[in-house]
Length: 282
Ligand SMILES: Nc1ncnc2c1ncn2[C@@H]1O[C@H](COP(=O)(O)OP(=O)(O)OP(=O)(O)O)[C@@H](O)[C@H]1O
Image (cartoon, rainbow, N blue to C red; front, side, top):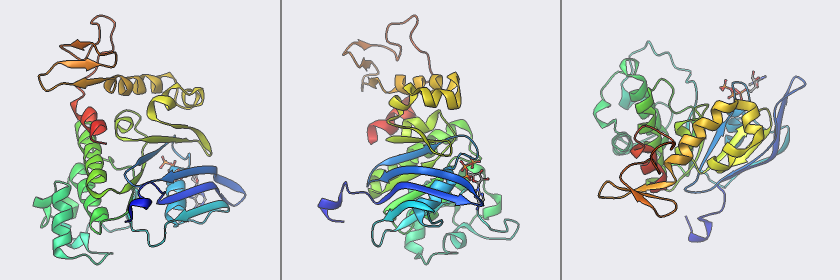
């Protein structure tokens, strides 16, 4: 990739909408994914997140507006559902090369990157939720994509596993320099791992940096007041830095021994090392 291309979008939707049988599934969607950036689509069930990702990928064609992709764009896609008969015996290594031609070295490298190197000979149907998501990620990055599209990358993963997967996505983005378009209805952890949030509800309800979206009345109307609390936790995690000696430096320069800024009344939260690392790596 040329240096001049570094910040040019990899893919872009402009005023994109899709109509089926007289209904608009989504409409008026603008978004761009640039190299090294993570854009996350959030929204309630049926709000058009998967449809928007499919428009961006070219799996669906917009009825109005445009969907543009850079010439020769290599895409790694982790769909929400895979049409595979999971009762059949299938090893992870074989699964990795089912639809794409990939070398053994590429399979090995991709699985190692996602922490699933030891699972090559394992049966796909015996994997845990977290292992499966790592294998799916490995499959998507095996051919070194320019852009990764991840539809619910933490399905079937418990809370601490989710943080690990989002950190992994952040690491992959840094290592490959790829752009990421991610779908999630998880308001908590995903916010720590994204540069831009696009909140859908059949149309773009609100958008911006996670902190800005948390202030948006449209966002609160859609998700209720608890959404703001979830995002407040996120914001709090990022208004301070953990110093090497264990102390914490806050946004105003004050240094304390813990995450709480001034003791009583400060927002309490679980130790945020994982999400903070994600953010600072970006
Ligand atoms: N091919 C299709 N034909 C008609 N309607 C569709 C089609 N695909 C999706 N829809 C409808 O479009 C709307 C948006 O669906 P979509 O899968 O994009 O939502 P989503 O935000 O990804 O939802 P979820 O969080 O449940 O995965 C839904 O009402 C869905 O029923």
